[in-house]
Amino acid sequence: MEAQAQGLLETEPLQGRDEDAVTSADFSSMLSEEEKEELKAELVQLEDEITTLRQVLSAKERHLVEIKQKLGMNLMNELKQNFSKSWHDMQTTTAYKKTHETLSHAGQKATAAFSNVGTAISKKFGDMSAVRRSHSEAACDDVMNRSHSIGYSIRHSISMPAMRRK
Image 1 (spheres, rainbow, N blue to C red):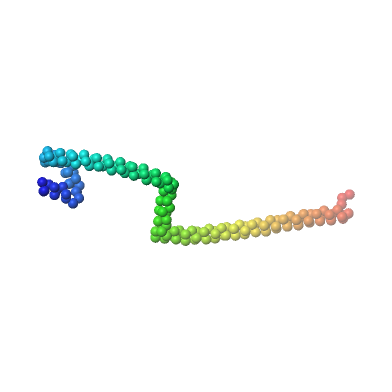
Image 2 (cartoon, helix red, strand yellow):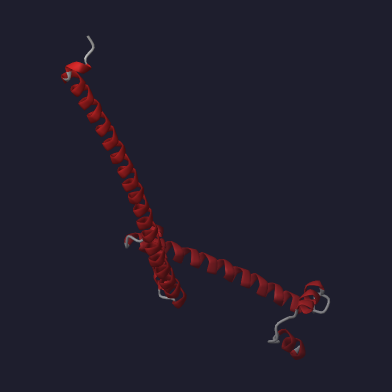
């Protein structure tokens, strides 16, 4: 009996092939009737203890919920607290700090680049507007000069009797 008991108390973990052998083996033929009865009684006792422990755990969980309700704690608050703590923990990691620093630097460079592009585009539009304005002004001046000269020639011909038709 001592040798069998020692074999059951081995501390080495079972290997895959050992587990297969144990599950397929039929030990009931190796046990005496008295040992079978002892094991059955132990099995019933363990099942009763497990049932009792489940009941105790369930009662403690209910009590925990009651206490949390009295304190105003609910699932949403717990989730918020867990999320906040996790977010804080993540922000304090070296990887997050390095990534944040890199992205911040990249954002500053991108902002500067977009600003430069915007300035260049504005300058081009300004140049185009100035060219268009100078062309428009020249065209307006030309029209004004022509209309002035036409008006002058009409006025001049009206004032000169020789140019009038009789």
